[in-house]
Amino acid sequence: MNKQDGVVPSLILVGQTATLHPYGDMSIYKAVARLGQAFEYRPKLLDFPSKVGTYAKPRPGGARYTKEGIADFARDVFFSKTIEYNAIPKELDELLYGYEPIYLPPTIPTALLYANSTIGYGDSSYTIPRNLADVCDITIAFTQHMKTAAFKPFDPTQIAEKFIPDFPIENTITNYDELIAFYRQGQFEHKVRMDGSVVLSSDSIVIRTLPYRARLPFEDVKEKIEDLIRNKDQDGWFDNAFLWIKSLSGGVDYGEIIVKLKRGINVFEAWEMLSPRISFSGTYTPFANYNNDGYAEYISVSNLLSIWYEARYNIIVSSKKIKIKNLTEALRRVEAILIICDNIDDVITLVRQNDDEGGIAALQKAFNLTWFQADFLVGAPLKTLAKTSKGQYELRKKNIESELLEIQASFGNIPDEMAADALAIKKKYALPRKTKIPHYIGYIKIDGGCIQFEMTTEIPELLANFPKGELEIHIYDGPYLYKVDDEGWYFYTTSRSRAIYRNGEIKSIAVIEEISLRKTICRGAATNIIYVYPEQEREHFVISLNTSTPGVIFVQRVGVDRSKIAMNPVGEVLVIHSTDAHTFVNIPQKFLHRSSLRVIEFLDLDKLLTTPQVKIDLATQATKNNKLIRLY
Image 1 (cartoon, rainbow, N blue to C red):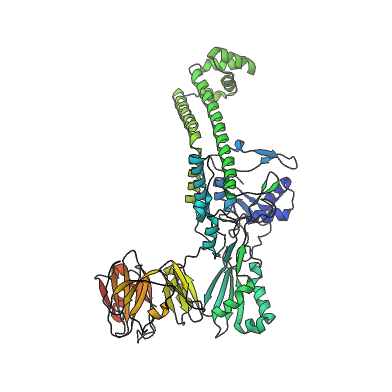
Image 2: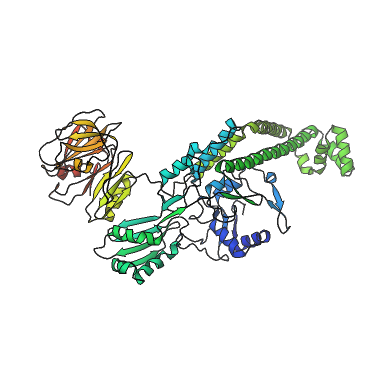
């Protein structure tokens, strides 16, 4: 398999593995298949050109039908060219058939990269997977620490965010801040809470994944839902709410179970009823219990890095010594050829007139050679000696000497080499996170519920899922999230805010708890404040929707310290501010009397604003500025 194009039938691989580890063909094949499943290992360690299973149907094809080969990532991590095979420690296998490596020292500590929940690392061991880029960054940080302060303990809490899990399937971590707080205290075994992945629309629920290592296998979810209907669970609620259920194959690392709702069923209520019954929220508690010299032992993150570093460092040192030995022998051979290159005929005569031992002695005496050099010449093919080019071998000698000096000087740079190797792996194989760390910037409020989003580019798709709903888009702009009422609606602001008054004045105010913010920003409320927004550190935009002039909006650029903006005090006014030139704006129901417009998307307010304030009649300007404005 370690050949460049090595792909072998699974039966051969399983059979050869069983000769060294006789623990059952099926268990070996399952372990081999998992190494090639993207929903288990990310990046994969094996490539399967044949069927290896999907998240929804994880069983691989039969071993007699499948083949596999080493993935490029595994080749670069475990079989890097900087490591000499003879430097790897080996031991006699259990059946005394031959020697096998005790371990293959990886370029990065793969024990931090991949999850393990078997006895492979030790008894009752549960480790968490992490993102490849993060593990590479951890590796670089540790190797640089060992270079500059090896006598001091490494403090992983300084890079706590790099240890956040990244499961190989679509999950969302729901206690990120809690994890970071514990990680910064050195408690890296804190319980991870996560949700699976689901897509809600006005009339359906599409379940894509469950939490990593969920109690309920994803392939059993459809049957579970059907049982809820069949058993009249919750007084027949599910039977009355669900029209049909269908299971699709989905992709390699996600499935698709579609639940179609009956007319009049609110999707948020249906999901609230269904999600706990399929274990959509789950936990994973890591316990770093490893097999150390045959004993189960808890190993901390710092100690794990130290164990990896020592093994990798020693292998690199051994590899360098082997390379020096090989190059030194090559240099002696080249020197021998240079010594005798002007006397080739004499060398051939001495070799032919004597046996091997006599020839070695004769060459040593005639040309003042070492035993090693004379032995080489005796065993060298005549063709090699006859076609000797002195200039060619002088150049080869110079190159070998230069390479030797380079390797000898590199012993002091091994930590830098390890860091460079980790950086190269990161650049070549880094993948975006599969598990979301939720950094929501806003939510869409829909009849009966709300859906949060992390990027404004998600909004059009979310709007398309609810084409007939009453929608409002709210974008957060501060570090504090306040729960306004028991229905779960949120208003986001900061302790220090700016208020826009009805006469156009802008003043700083101190927000104390919630201070009835909902009333403050409601149109027609008994207050002079018509809008509150967080204090900005950069200029932003204010968009005024004036219903006294249907179809007309005003956009203004507002500096950080600006104290007044142009306002039309007549009629009902809604002011929306944005810190981004790309923004979405909700439209009041009566704003445009000629269409059912719900949302305006400004693609680039910077380009739209040719003056500090721009008046836009959407009925005429929308088509002219179709590259800057979109209507929904």
